[in-house]
Amino acid sequence: MPTNNRVSIESQMMDLNAVKALIRAGNFLMIAADESILCQLPAGNWIGGTIPYFMDESGGLVSREKIFVHTIHGCQSNNPPRITIYDNHSISRIATDAPAHGFTITIIPALSDVHLNYAQNAPEFPSMFYTPLVGWISGYHLEDENPVAKVGFGPGGSMLMDKQAVAMHVPLPENQVATVNIINLFEEGTGPALAFSSTGLTTSECTIDGVPGNFAEFITDNNIDIRSPLVADYSGIKVNVSIQNVDPEKRQVRLYAPVFEGVTYHFAKPIQDFVTTYHNHLERSGTDIENIAFSCNCMLNFMYSQLEGKKVGQIIGPTCFGEIAYQLLNQTLVYLSLTEV
Image (cartoon, rainbow, N blue to C red; front, top):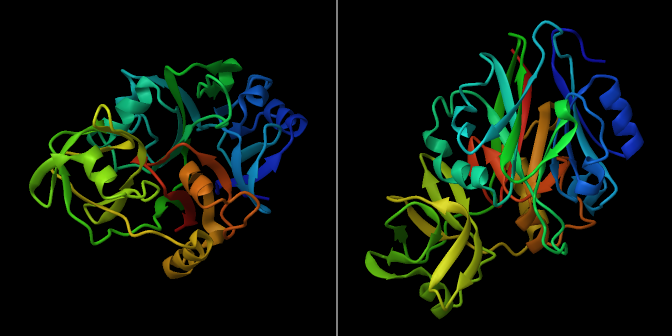
């Protein structure tokens, strides 16, 4: 049982009645589930996001009934976590709202204005990168008709439409620190260097090894496998930009995360065996599984690597439409570690 001077997060798959009991007991929770489940939860100290895809201890799982729950233990009664709603205008203050010593977990609905704003502008938000900030992009079952990603605001016992995001700001005792970590399986390939003249989630014109060209035509003419993302070096961190679709008629490419002006990209080297590569990355990184408090994986990893029923290490959590480690990421695994100092 956690002590009073130590915060920990318990991660587990649960059923509806068990989660209702946790909420009514006053626990602080981060919840991932299908919308049909989230909308049945009572008011309480929770935030949630719609998603039916998960990684649990038995492997990849698709379920409209199960609920993945992160339960925060050891919260101080005189300084509890704070739950906040953000919209397109207020999301820029998410880092400045963070506790002086602690971390923030946020959930943002896919394809919303606040999602697009965050994707393009988060690196420039005030105080960003000064406080540990992680989270994920909520989504829906890929077979749903006319789907809309949503988030849940526990204090109001309500589901929010695609106009707002939620966050939980969690203070830590002085003897603990939170660290944000990224596992990116992809490496820059040896193909042409690609650069874009503007920042955005839709792009057309680019330079290819310095020569002007059209990005959609480049992908089509070279038969590029768009399951491999663009990769760039962002100040020493390898960041992916995943391709959503290519529109030959409009000569445009839609992206899951923005490309940035002035950054050089390459298509990633293809990965033949995701599970083996994933295990190798965990071993090389020396990941301390015991200290991992929160994690999320990308839906594209789950889908392209056919992870349903496959176990990939001990890291568990929701499988989402995008990961947040300060800024928006694609095709990565993000985790938050809590360690004592």
